[in-house]
Image 1 (cartoon, rainbow, N blue to C red):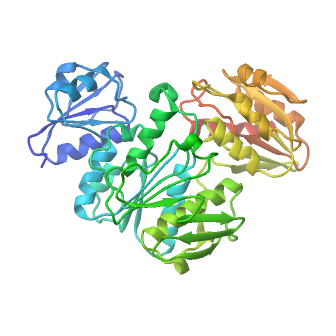
Image 2 (tube, one colour):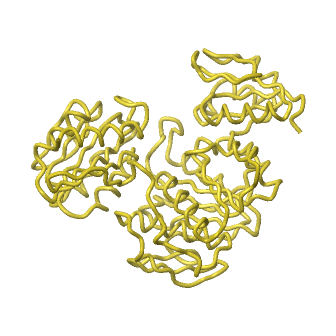
Image 3 (cartoon, rainbow, N blue to C red):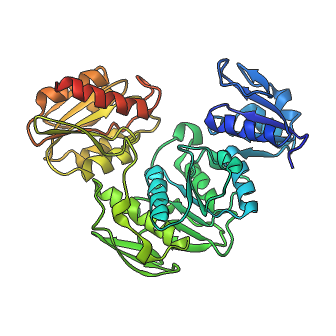
Length: 440
């Protein structure tokens, strides 16, 4: 279907490279474009780097967009007006997988979507099913198109950026976990952000399952909704759907309703019980029997409330993926016992750091603010023991000075990493190395 077609791939991150390589293998005439001059190259493609040319967009039969390129880009706006088809890399791959019969289990939300995707993948695998996991994190979905064998399920994390151009994406099971102030620099308002999130449900069939939270904490002002979806409407915190009380989970409206015991879960934090609950709902809605759900198999992804070092009775915990305030609140409140909390990095538009005050209770002995947003965070908070540090390294050494036996030192920064680091993974790895150095 792509043979001879003129395909433009805009944005040459990992997903863009994957889409370009696949289109070339299908016989397409591929042009790749990126604002960077040093973006990755793809053999066989025409390269336009250092900026976008409107003529490339208007002369294409199909434009495949990477998440880093916003829908507001002038070249995309002009192409849309001209009626040129535009689709995200994930939507492009999903349409082809759906035609081949691979069920897609899709997860979005402000926080927790990577963890829930990873948990669902592990539950499916433990139940004897072949599962792919990727999308917005890990492996681009397009790479699955060229796999030698197709899995029983594709578990896909989906970002709001990918939902700007979802194409024919039609998941069999779809979950939007929560909504919080994030990515407002791109989406401009939380209502617009919510509208993009729930586009995940638009194309679903009446044999699918679509789940959102009811709680105002997770769904402020009811901005998340099922829309006009044909799928069965489910809830993450009431019936039909799932309802959790402590370690007991109750499912309703699925193929196998009834209780699931979460007690075997070994991970830190109440939010991981919520994440595990969502993964159970996804797996059972996809057809796994409750008797085949093995909660004890779940392991965490790196940089998500991850214990990384222990010395002198102090446990150092890397929660670098907590790149917004709600994620930091979940990490701080989910870690029991006395702790020192490190907050800071590159601030985000609309961040209300005073909301962190609610979890800076008697169990938080010290608050150390660092990085570009450090001073702003400190000014928004009130705590008996609060100080500012210029860098993450300075913050770690200050924490080591203050730490006492049985303390946890928690990096749960509530900020992006881009003041010092290229991504949250690099920040988390650096935190681990600094902790080891500071306690040597």
